[in-house]
Length: 410
Ligand code: ADP
Ligand code: ASP
Ligand code: MG
Image (cartoon, rainbow, N blue to C red):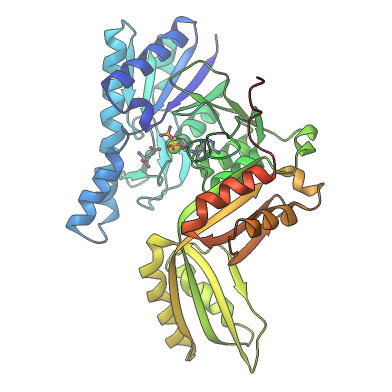
């Protein structure tokens, strides 16, 4: 008898028929003799609708109220899933994050998990019950309901798998696993059988939302193997695990696309020690996540600094930059260009293969895609480009690294 954690994403519980489908899968595992902990997301579209409602009442809603609002989505799914299981004759109980003893810090809407006591999960499992836990939420030490940030039901699943010492943690979603690129964008993308934590982490951080990056980070730190697979069929899926030597055989494992980026260009920046430090300090104080950064060579004591941010942070970034201009007394000019996208290639094989950047940049050049910024890590190369060219750029890069499925033989 194994203890397994199964996480069902929003599309997998989008309507009552899908909830019944999830319940049938859960029942099959339970009938198999496994102890099953289920983590559920809000039904597809619910969280977005709640956020829209909140923001149409107030531009920057209070974090505590926001968390109370957003947790409703997961709470609805957990109770409906329990009912669907009851209807199939399976004994099941649902638990909110707080009831499952998921304790967090008190940073509303982006809380971090501090510890998991598990509440009465063990007793319930030992009594033969399926336990359904609402994803993406916990409780602060002050007793306030908190959430962990978008897509973080994956994190609930991984953290519970670790706390309960589960044998396996399955991320059940609406595609067959992790692909060489988003299969909705590139239909010829191939399913990856095994991927290392580091590659998955880089892909997730670069925009492949199939598994949330903090969940992958947690899985890596605690050695939890993840299986990403479809909730709609029984195909095997992708295993996310510790790196093995053969993973370096291919240079590029996958391509990721992040839309909704903006580029902030600062000109006439004083080229003296401490200027950049102060600028990025001001941005950090306002919790603006800066991604790619480029500073050109200074001339006549002045330089240009360019960086990218998420488009939703544009207004706050502009405010922060103006504060910095005032504080340092600079005569810098700021311009913000939205409609930017980031395309990345990721693979642990980059450590031992040369020419990855050349292949990527040549493919982009041949497609007439202008590269605006470049950033690299040991296993990733990212470029910022015009949003209008984003999908084409992904396609040409994907095919330049021959990542596509082999065509079926005639
Ligand atoms: P869930 O609601 O189950 O959490 P998500 O929408 O968060 O599902 O993630 C699944 C989606 O991720 C897929 O529908 C797919 O469009 C997208 N995706 C992006 N990149 C990839 C990739 N490399 N492999 C698989 N899916 C990807
Ligand atoms: N419902 C939350 C969201 O949409 C969490 C999740 O689905 O993982 O972001
Ligand atoms: Mg998701």
